[in-house]
Image (cartoon, rainbow, N blue to C red; front, side, top):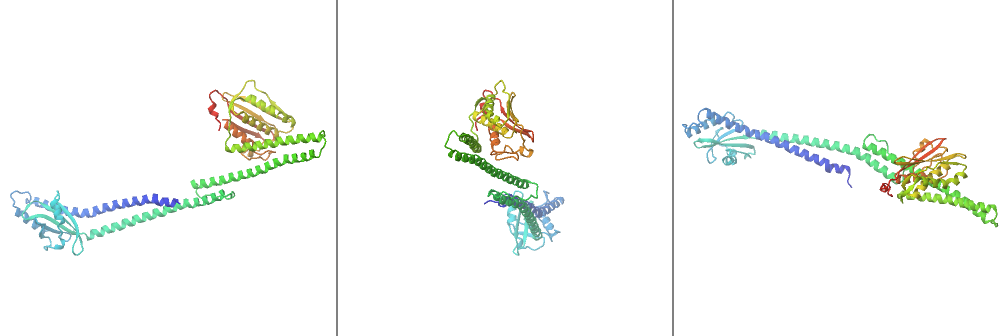
Length: 480
């Protein structure tokens, strides 16, 4: 399993190590060239000074001077060399044999031959080499060919010890490596500290999320110390747990409510079946009344089952069979359908049918279900003697159906949740709590919207808005 720490070690840290290694390599290369190149430059400067002195004395480049006199001048320069404590100055013949030295001693330990061969083969006439003497001392030798004939003198050679330079070089190497290792250690420590500050809260989030997924909806993440992405994630998970808890509560209430709603008509049906079974005269008034009660309660059960089936379909997406409809005719049919129940409840329906049709693109069965559900709620929450108002309106782009009752109203804290599945408000009476959720889903699928406004003690207004149908706009409301 990959972890953030491993990904950081293999990614960011590896890149940082490579960058540090490259920087260290460039720095050491620069220091090496500066140190050892500086020694070589110092030797070449000595050669340039010597050649300049010879030119100043008229020896070099003077066609009247003999080659032997030039050689003698070079030998005197070797004898008079004033930096014998730093360099060994030598003159070589054409075979690379030492003719004379500044110390007066021909030290074979300082002979290598590589620098002389390189000078012979180099276009600049200069050759350099670093080697160890037989005593184990590292030295640098630089040889430059004499630019003019000087008897048997062919080249000038300087040799110097590298002990001090090597010491400074290795000091630089170890100091730079120490700085790199310190930087790498600081980078590693700070990176691990930062990653642990992410990984630890995430591990806690993972553990809490697993507990929530396993059904422990009461567990919560502690308040995050940082107001960053992790803190927002913790708050989001806590909010999710709150929503899940609320959904679970509403689902349990829904199951309890449905069980109660089913038990009541079943109990009534069972009681009247037993009563009718004991009657022998079909003309008995209780016989007819029992059949009416059984029929009514059966219709009630059928409506509840249909509502539950609608809820099940809602989970899988609503299937629509749309066609061009007259919203006025559909609303009038729904009003006629509930008119008998309105009179039975002692209510009055206030409805004025518009004279012209309101065309919409909708499913007739689903649209009728929307009207009946909304009117049923208005009837259910209206007091005896009250009125239910059904109003239709139209603009150029939309038609609106408004159903208003004079009932108890919906508390403000419940108003924003009445369209949620399973929700039953504090003032709710019988019902499953999914009617308005189904209404809202159907209207949304038809390209419309459902708005609910309510005032406690004065009633509730439900407004359903659908787009006006224009030929060629069928694709705007395809079945979903």
